[in-house]
Image (spheres, rainbow, N blue to C red):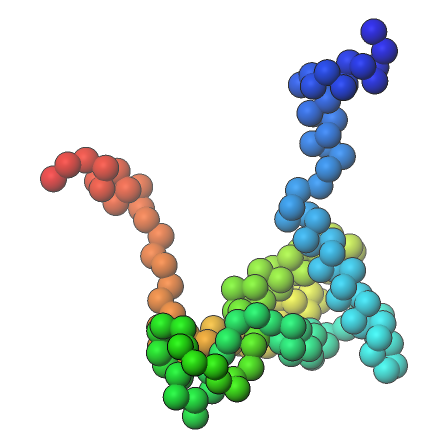
Length: 167
């Protein structure tokens, strides 16, 4: 039996080989995000080398991405500001990147930076300015929707076991 036929028959060896060669969805997104950020830096005038960027470049990139967002974020002057239900009528408020999308993006870029040779200490994606920016975006978007952001509490082992047993 040839090797090709053996793999074509759907053996477990084929799935193991495939898993090793096909990156996960997260790894694919991380590589795509890293490449896109690199292209963004190259398009700047003057171009910025990847490992010379700082948190101001990252903040400018996040602001640049806002124009491609799909989340309606109402301004304080809009009649729909603070309403938790989607607006029944159109308004002129802009579409923005959702906070969760930006937070995930920064997490992937932070990991990619270090995987591509950047030092942990100099990682611009892990700076305090980025955390503050993300917190402000989260709070602003929560207020615009009328739903204050509440951090989820982690369940302890006793709480999760206790909730399974009848009272």
